[in-house]
Length: 250
Image 1 (spheres, rainbow, N blue to C red):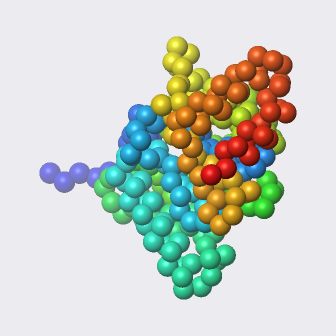
Image 2 (cartoon, rainbow, N blue to C red; image 1 turned 90 degrees about the horizontal axis):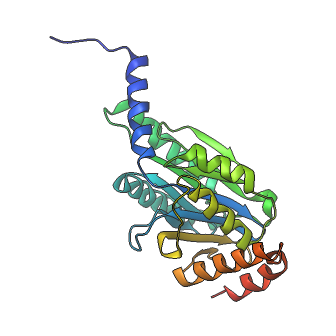
């Protein structure tokens, strides 16, 4: 026999389903530092990326089902390329891309039986920290304008609390990476994340043209070691980090 389900109950069931799927994944954190925006994912895979470049100054990070957020990433790249070619590269913005993603996710959530099990961050680095843009999008198409830091996936509440306790505005790359890794480790006090278990990238405002840069495992290990030694020597990393960041230029 046919049965009736109220729209409110249907939306609630979809939302619960999507949240459970997202929480089963590994976490990603995005945070600002003095020279740009840092992306750190708990991801041992070297081929299946959670963090990617979208356009010159724009990057994308996601948690959830890989095939679903990869489909969204490809759509974002096509949107950026077409608009940059037809109009001007400066017309491609994180805000415009976030609006496109919000419309797509909202339509999928309301009009299909199965919602996307994804959560996204679209970030654009500006000329200074005040003009950086970070947008967080959830499975139902909701958009939030974030400042400072964002945590998604896994035990996001625990990661966000650790970020709140450790984050400092204007921190160096070394300090920001150390804060991000400690936040990811807050999900399991017995687990220590190594460089090979991390996917790390930056939008560096000091670079030219394409500002996105993915860090190698060796470079991540060097930064983590510098952060640990700086912490042990009562904040020596604050003076050492600028030279380290200059050495990271490729």
